[in-house]
Length: 116
Length: 111
Image 1 (tube, helix red, strand yellow):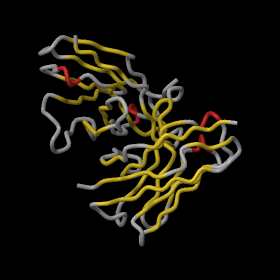
Image 2 (cartoon, chains in turn orange, purple):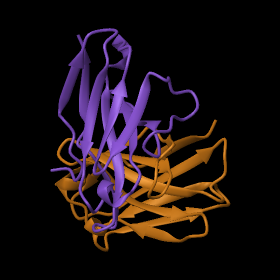
Image 3 (cartoon, helix red, strand yellow):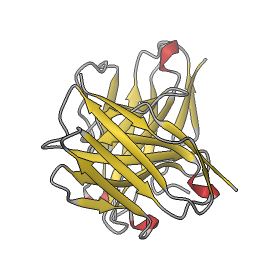
Image 4 (cartoon, helix red, strand yellow):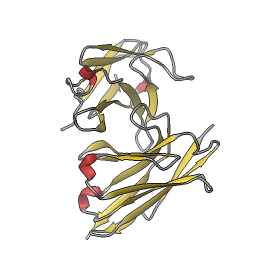
C-alpha cells in the first residue's frame, strides 16, 4: 500500500519561505503525478499544484509566482516551496497522488502556522 | 466562498439514506469535468470515496454511490451508520480558473 509522509517546519514567520517535502513509500514517484493541497478553516481545501515525475508542473493561478514544486526521483520525494508567506498561508498542507482528476493517496498532513 | 456549492450539513437516522448535493457551473461540472468525492474525519486526511462521478475505489462500501446530472452531482449514503459521521467534499476541475476546485464540505450527523 502506497504511503505518503509530509515533513516540514511547523512554525513560520511572515515574509519567510516555506519548504515541505513529501516522501513516498510502497510505490514510486516515477510515472505518476503528485500534488500539494492545503486546508484551512477560512478557505477549505485548496489545490496548490502538481508535478509529473518528469518535472512538468502546473500551478493554481491564485498563488501567482509564489509556488514551486520539484521532484527528486532518486529519493522518491517531491517538494513544495512557497515564498512570501502571510498569515493567510496558515493551513494543514497535504501531499497527494494525482493531478487534475481524483487524488487517491494522501499524506496525513502537516500543520503550518505563519505568525509575525 | 467555494466554487462548488454543498450544503453545510445534513443529518439522518441510522439505517436511513441521505444525499449530499454538489452544484457547479458551465466552467466545471457543467463543462463535463468529472466529480470526485472524499470523506474526512477530524484530524485525518481526506479519503477518496467516489471517482469519475460514479465509481467506487476498491474497499469502499457499496452503501456509497455517486450520480451526475448536468452541472449538479450528488453523493448518496444508504444504510446510515454511526461511523459515517464525517465531512464530505466534492472536487472537480474548473477550465476557466485552470485549477482543481473543491466544495466547501458537508458535515453529516447520524442522529
